[in-house]
Structure formats: C-alpha cells, structure tokens
Amino acid sequence: MARTPSNMLPLGTQAPDFKLPDAVSGKTVSLDELKSDKATVIMFICNHCPFVKHVDEVIVSLAKDYQAKGVS
Image 1 (tube, rainbow, N blue to C red):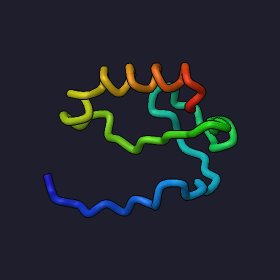
Image 2: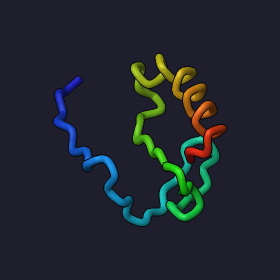
Image 3: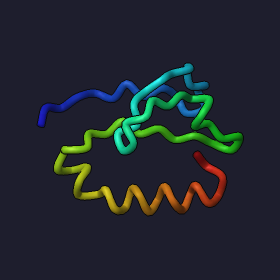
C-alpha cells in the first residue's frame, strides 16, 4: 500500500454541499438529507479494502451507537 498524506480539513469546517452514491443502497444522497444538528460524520472508505473489511463490524457498531445519540 502506498503512503498517502492526509488532506484532512480542520475539525469544525463546514462541509460543502454534495451528492454522492450510498455504497450500501446505491441511492444518491446529499448533505441536506444526511446532516444532523448535533454532528455529521462521513467516511470515505473502500468497500473491498482488506483493512476496511477487517474493521467493518466495529464501524457499523460505532455508527449505531452514535446515531442513537443524534449523530448522523
């Protein structure tokens, strides 16, 4: 795997509007549909990456825990 530097925006940066395909449903979703007043987390991960597959169940569990707290 090639080393790639992060281009992360500073925390608290307002997200630009977007429309992206949901990898699970195939439906196109926008920021307006997903955003929460509390916080919104969007992960750009590769569905077939072995590293992502390895932690998939933990990511799903973490997402469910935070959705219950109002995080989208």
